[in-house]
Length: 419
Image (cartoon, rainbow, N blue to C red; front, side):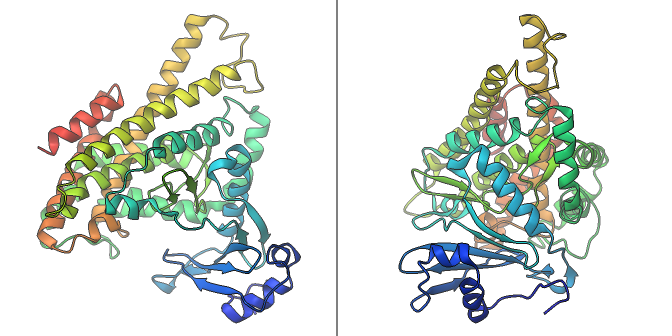
């Protein structure tokens, strides 16, 4: 046991821990003899246990002091569990329908006990690979993003409350540095961690490393990521951080959360939908050419942004005389000006979204951590063809994002490149 009270739990010591923790023991009706415990952590950073008893269930997530898939050679702060728990609680208050409830947090043990998002929920990324449509996905994720981002921004908070919140989350510097490295640095240089579908994408990876304009734009996005404390963002909002059924959408794993640019969350989600789109040809077979499914993904991309826009601006209107200090009513005191301000804000946010989304796409093709959407395409040459289309689109989107006026133009550009 470490001097700080931390010890990694296995299934046996976990049971002892549960017995000694009243809030968790109560969830199980204090019955421990027929517990079903499964370790399901397929991520890179944590142990995740599902605990099911006769009268209740929950998930236990424990942060490890290193990156699990690489081992102790890449140490990692355990303190991230505090930021994950705090964000689950903060975002959960703002959007309880789409964030699992936290039952217990133990800071010394870096351990969170939270609601078990039970079957038939699956990870959205797996659903997209399987070609499953989720009719409420765009509606739900737009509501989640609109509420969590609006209520933690200066559109709703006083500068004092906002600054206090920013200060609290500044401590999550190590996970921010990890993002800075893997999203904004590694793909643009030779790095030992980078990999791609070789030899097919060797020239494409080299082209990324030699593209001056791309690097210029990436520097601007990195600066925004590091310097713009706009709202409390999830920080890792890809399709692997969302669990879904036909009726339900649950956002999990906000351990990368901090006060950053809103477009990083919206872009992460939309960028991963675009990756899923370009991967579809690799999953087509005799039974299905996936054409209709690709149309559904494009509709979901459009709906996600358009519904976010609608919900976010509705919250803005609803609270225009609220505590927020971004645009004081005494100054922004006529409808024309209020409209101008809103248009400018949303236009900037749209272009941030496209830029960050594109950067997240690029790093998943030539960086350290790839996505199952492509990795599960067995035939390397076919996988590379899908990845190349996605990479070329992402480079165009990143460099020319300011030319796009609305999400419809982005979808048209995707269709055009896919011909």
